[in-house]
Length: 116
Image (cartoon, rainbow, N blue to C red; front, side, top):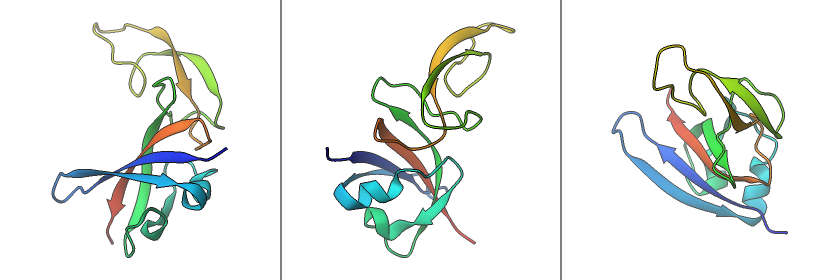
């Protein structure tokens, strides 16, 4: 089974974002990384850049949550983002979310350029 990700690279200085498709061996190198991990941009064809994982989403659109370990899906009672934006003060709902680890079921990975 081939692994494929859409990686959204955001530049905080310009405010612009660019989508890069990553397939094959380079995509396999991203599996196992977690939200907050920093990796080399040459994996996605952006040599010379350091990229930090900030989030992502799975096949069904469920968001990755940084406070949930592993890569599986779970229903959680949420009162704040990511995964739920309350319309009223104090509102809570059970929502389907995914753990912070990147697996084969993740479709999109959001990264930001890190500068020293």
